[in-house]
Structures are given as C-alpha cells and as structure tokens.
Image (cartoon, rainbow, N blue to C red; front, side, top):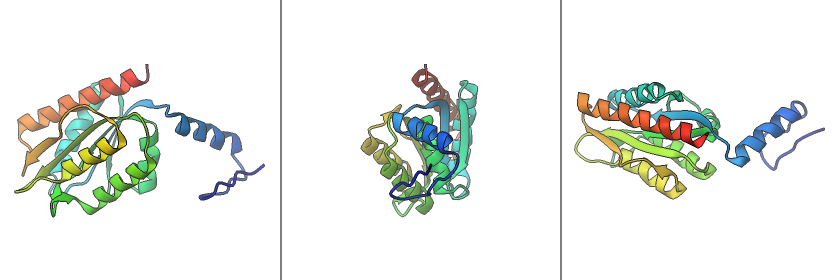
Length: 180
C-alpha cells in the first residue's frame, strides 16, 4: 500500500508505475536515446552540442539536448538513466569544467548508471580542462568511450562542427545497437 525508501518520496499511490520505473532503472535497460548535456560560456560549446544533437537525430536515434544550467540535476539524472548514449560538453574555466557542468558530472558519477556509450567535448582558450573532466568521469564510470574528446580552441571551425555531427551519428548508431 506504500513505498517508503530510505530517502526520497514516500509513495502512497501510483505504486505499480513506480515499481515498473524502478525495475527499468535497476535493470540498466536503455532506450535508443542520445542525451547531449552541455554548458557554454560564449556559445562555442553550445554550437558543438547542437551539431552533436543534429548528428544523433540524423543517425536515427531519439535525442535530447540539455543546457545544464537550464535543467535540474533531477531532470539530468532521470534522462540519463534510460539513455543508451551520452555526450557531455563544457568549456574550460580555471583549468576545469564550468561549475554547473562539474556538478552534473559529480551527480552522474554518484548515480553510476551502467553501460553508456560516451563522448566528451568542449571549447577552450589557452588551456584545456573542460572536456578532459568529462572524459575522466566517463573513465571512472567505465562507460564505452567512443573516441577522444572533441575540442575547439575558441570557436569551433566548420570542420570541427562536422566532426561533432559525425560523432552524433556514431552515438546514435551505438544507442540503436544497445537496444537491439
């Protein structure tokens, strides 16, 4: 009649739906979905994120694009659970990712969702660090990293944006493969 986890909401209704959701989350079942998460300072990393998103859509997968400062950590966590592939981008700030990007990476690392195809990307000025932080998180999670991070110094060139679209298509392919 009631679900009372050790933390979180106590459920007194919608019990079958909640149990089904927990079953999906704990089984590691995924959808043919590419989740593109990013933060951006001067829109450079945003341009890269949109190119990856466009590539994923063009590759036939479901795709979602989330700016981490405009999405809640709960929404990011929920969407990441059933995504077969995740691309994460951040520009570099003080030799690392933007603060909200760092928070999202920390949250994902704590959730430890299994078996994701992953891609790190980001822009930088004189020193790298944003994309590298995402890559380190993916390595710690033991996700299937599809390639080295895509980096753009300052603004992404047309060639880098095409590289992003190609990576999005590859993520879509991996997402579709993961779901049979």
